[in-house]
Image 1 (cartoon, rainbow, N blue to C red):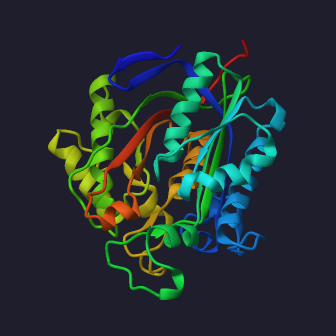
Image 2: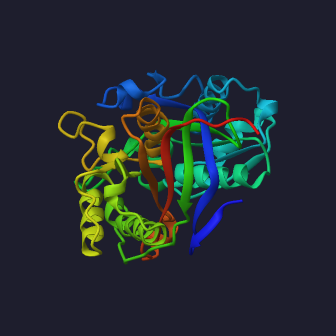
Length: 344
């Protein structure tokens, strides 16, 4: 069983292997600087479907299926899928994965869903509740814009602080044990809801940065580590503006992460050529880059030890219209590079 080391903070009783990952992205993401890390890039924003919502379900199903295939498993060998997305009631996940007939836990952490899924899957694997679990998530530019902002046909002007919701998906297969060398999850920190009164739905980075900082500070304090102990300190989709705020907040608490901090939202697009303003966002932003870019770095030893904390704004369009502020959350997992494990 995992070992409690602080409020919402734990270390796994043994490293939890990540057997395989898969990452699929849309055309715009495939034109960006991270294109080489995706398993597939699809130029059809409908993914062969008739609506954007159906498209996102197909995107997530294809990503999960690819991760299962890369792990050398069959769906019947899975003990659970933990998946979520941004569409109302997480319907992209439930509709997209319903044909697999695998035990399903729908989760919602907004754009923090990938790290939430990894955290929960590692706890399940560590507890003996099963042998194989998948953490998965997705987002789609058109489904998110329709739900959270404006119909695309309006052609609404985007503010400089706005971010571009990624059309992308990531899926990771975790196991209780593994025979081969593989990256592993070794601990985690459950995020606390933070709300510093930001009300601008077009400035998600400012809303989410305090949640990421709170989670990282709690991890450092409970684990007795500091940014210098890691090769990478990764956040989900704070974007360019939120990343600067995050580093400032950590520095005020005595933690200097500026030299090793990386943000998926800031990495996904080229701000000079792709007109994405403050960067990328969406569940699929952190999900696809962790399962593509960072997992490969862990496999090759480029990164030996990292912290990954996706970030989510828990907003409701209705409550924003009622004058509410934006509460945010960030969940964290500690991941280390290849570790040899023998099947027990």
